[in-house]
Image (cartoon, rainbow, N blue to C red; front, side, top):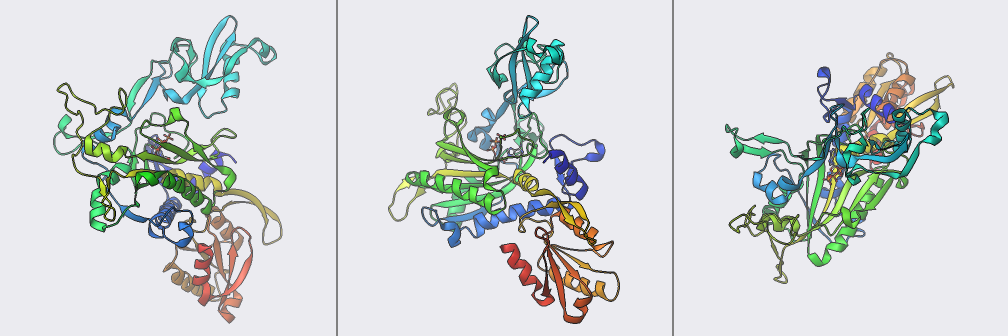
Length: 535
Ligand code: ATP
């Protein structure tokens, strides 16, 4: 299925719009339309309900090493700048970028792949943006660059498989992904991804603050507040959903890489000796959640990070990755990262930022031998009341993106099929097969025709259902057309008031996926819909 079709349906039906579209849009920023806002709210609410409110349902406890507590939090986007110094973001949260002097385009250094190509006595490293069908693209670019026709394709020699631009030392031999000439890419430069702003009337450096690039730090700095105010014991997870901002160099693939996005994060605090078990638990639990929400097993993988991918403090990290349609065949894109962070974060906020570059275990010192970025000095440790043991908890972090999850559910839901219309003629239809919990509209209510008292009854049904669900009322046009509009919106149930309703107070309920119609009593409608949504 093609991404273009999904993008165009999203605009047409009101799932997603480009931000500030009438002014030409702003790259990396997206608005959710009337259906999109409901879908994303349902994603976030399902996550919150399953992870926070109902986490101790017996079904989800299966597999947990022991009972555990969960609490929620909602922190500010702008925090004390020292937070970002101690977390490491101020010094280390950057990507490397290269600019093309010819096209003025900017790329992430680690997102360009290329291949050594030789022809006509010239050897060039020809690049393409990673993720595209790069082998094919590089072949086409090579023919164009060397001015060689398809019939002489044998004259082009390739040296090895595609490799990342980061492995190339001399950029003078590189053909940029959109350039015509060789050697137009600049040397890579560091680029901090945090957006800067100013707090208060001062516009100088003293007032400098940052928009948070992750929600996690708000949880770490409030760890003690949550413990003290709730009197919870470890193991304890603290959850937060909220906006994060990253000045991504190359935002792309629709909402997959945006500059403003929402995260759904849990910081799970536990005893160091039990942290491996909890790491395993959260990897399984989060994988199961996506399956429960309708992502099939063959389109979701858990990819363990290789040792050289791991941050130095990380004991283990695994990404949950989905087969997004914009990825090349057999490749997956990150939906969520689950990492075992040891005691790095709490310790950094107690002691100060650790110097990752020179010596991970030493504090970074200034010229007077004092810690350069001082921590809060506060005791963020934990004392076990039963055993008296004091320790700095270890942290497991399942960190998901609400927008990436929403995009995955959109891609997964998109289906084209053929169904018979009222006259038995086969008609193509687009149907968004969302899990009923995620569907933006749960039910649509239609009078079969706009007369004989049917609209009055249908409106009553609609007003009653509205108290419990997001429902839609439609009396315009042919019934088949009304069904098809709801199929595109992903509405799981369509309720029709017809002649028989007026006699026996029953309506039909049509299932979006099976198209089965069942006749049910109006009085029982709310319960039936609720039961079907809950599965
Ligand atoms: P990537 O490697 O794709 O940049 P990341 O590893 O930097 O992602 P994390 O810092 O682990 O991402 O953030 C946790 C989650 O937040 C990601 O799994 C993703 O779902 C979401 N996320 C991160 N960056 C973005 C972004 N620019 N746009 C949308 N979602 C994002």
